[in-house]
Length: 328
Ligand SMILES: NC(=O)c1ccc[n+]([C@@H]2O[C@H](COP(=O)([O-])OP(=O)(O)OC[C@H]3O[C@@H](n4cnc5c(N)ncnc54)[C@H](OP(=O)(O)O)[C@@H]3O)[C@@H](O)[C@H]2O)c1
Image (tube, rainbow, N blue to C red; front, side, top):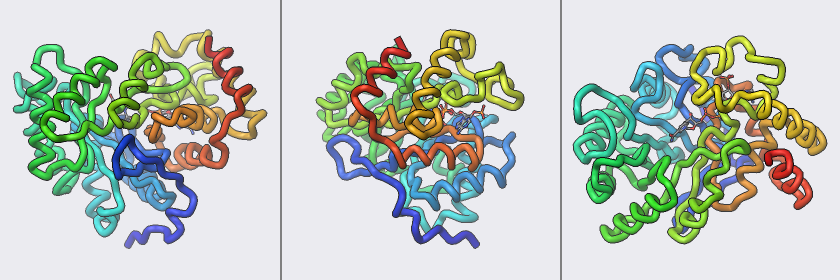
């Protein structure tokens, strides 16, 4: 029987999310691509339980993580049953809905009908009574924002989620969403944006809004899906996300120019005495609006390396300038 490591809270660092009582571990584990029905269950189980043993309390899921859709949550549910049930109150579990999930007009986007049904399905797959955070996964240009926010508010009132958030919303959309929920007496607490050295859109307005609204950012694809490791330095490594054909926007990201930048960043990381991946994760947290980075590690070996960034999170002004210069 799994017994969590007694020292699990000694090494991890936790950050408060916006104006709230909620603390996140500075590194979380995401289930997008590597915990589905096609993955080896024991590898998933080892990654999740070792994450927990090292103070990672936050696990990020969504209805359509897999493949196939739903299977990321099913894997999580199996691990919950086998190992983690006794620790439920020590865990922060999130799910989302907003992308295509099932056929027909009620299995996509942002209607109350879709969000409500989807969360009920997610809870069953994950073997949970409630999630800690429920997100609307992406803005819906057709559904009135009031309806989507009303769905989130209802979910909180029903006790199916403790906190709510949005993902992939622009600065302006986030401000509107926050105002609508405030009018319903609910705090929109979390934003889940993409953020990495190769994707800095949050710096252009979103982080200002998060500060104003008392929200925190839990950042996805912090290693630009693996580009901020050494694995693409000499072409596409066998078995990598790019080789598997699941690297999102591969053509615009895995370019000679970006590999050149990653190599220069790696030199700086070596000077700092850490791996490129570790420096890339620490850099995201150099902004205090960033609450946690969601690692999409494929196995424990990768996650273990990534957690090591906690040993050196500080940057000098000179180092931050050099990074900006490289990324120009
Ligand atoms: N809200 C949204 O719309 C949204 C979108 C995307 C992701 N997310 C969330 O964010 C999480 C993370 O996203 P992501 O998977 O793109 O993050 P990521 O951490 O940037 O990329 C993960 C990939 O990087 C590689 N990697 C990680 N650590 C490594 C290491 N130490 N050494 C070598 N390679 C390493 C692995 O690639 P290989 O597989 O090639 O080894 C892994 O599959 C997701 O699981 C999900 O929870 C949310």
